[in-house]
Figure 1 (cartoon, helix red, strand yellow):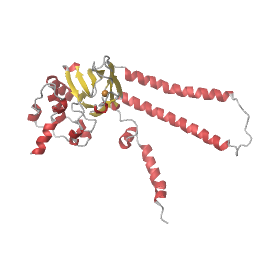
Figure 2 (figure 1 turned 180 degrees about the vertical axis):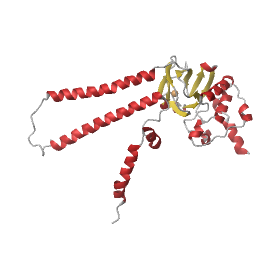
Figure 3 (figure 1 turned 60 degrees about the vertical axis):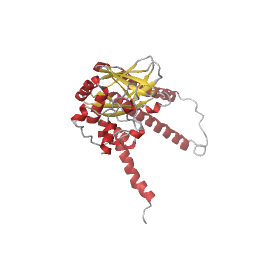
Figure 4 (figure 1 turned 90 degrees about the vertical axis):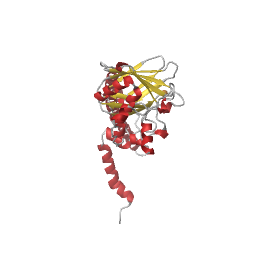
Length: 327
Ligand SMILES: [Cu+2]
C-alpha cells in the first residue's frame, strides 16, 4: 500500500529538515528563517551574539535536565508505582550540591558578561566623531572632525520608495549616514534642547543609545564590512516614533574621504554623488546601479529650495526617475 503523506513527511521530510536546521550556523539561520540575532557588522555585535549563543546552550541544558527530573519523578514516584512513600526530609549532601552548582553556573555566566560590558563600553583611541541628535521626528548628523558636515535625515515616504535603488519601506532615509569601514568611530548621542528622548539603535552594530535633551551619551563602533545598515528610533517619542529610521552606508575609507570633502562644501551634492555612485543598498537588493555620467554628478539637478522648506524633496534621485520615465 502507498504510504500516506503524513508518514512520508514523518519518516523522511522531518529528519531532513531537522538536520538542515541544526547544521546551519547562526548567521545562516538569521538570513534564511529570520530567527536568531541579526548578522553582526561590528566586533561588539559579534561579542553580544556569541554571549547570547553561550547562554542559549546553558539554558537549554538546564531546561532538559529539569524536564528529565520531572518526568522521572512522575513515572517513578506516582501513587501507583510507589504506594508507600519514603519519609526522608533532609539530605545535607544534596542541599550542598544543589546550592553550589547553580552558583557555579552563575559565575560561569558572570565572567564573560563583565568582559563583554567592559569591551563594548570602552572606546580605544577613536579616529573620528559622529554627533547624532534626535528630533521629532528625524535625525540630525554632524561630523565635527570633517569640517562640520551637517545634515538631517528623514524617512522616505512610502509612495516615494524606489525598490530599484534598494530602498526599503519604513527603513530608508533621504540622506544616508555615510561612514568609513575599519575606523573606530565615537558617537555622541543627544536630543534637541526642546525635544524629547529618542534612542539611536543599530542592531547589526550592537548599539542602542538613548538621546536625551541636555545630555550627551556616548558609544562607539567600528564597522567591519561595507554595506547598508538599518535601525530605528527605540524610545517612544511621539506620534511619528516609528517613522524616523536610521540608514548607515558603510563605504571604503577613500570613498568616505571623497564624500566628506564634498559634503563639507555642499551636503546635498555629496549625498547625490554617493547615492548615484556607491549605493550598497542596491547591491544588497541585487540591483546593479550604473554610475551616473560625470556631468550629472558634478551638477545634480536639484531645484533650489527656499530656506526652511521641508527637506523631504531634497534628494536628487526623484528628479532622475521622473526624467527617465517621461521621455
Ligand atoms: Cu524618536
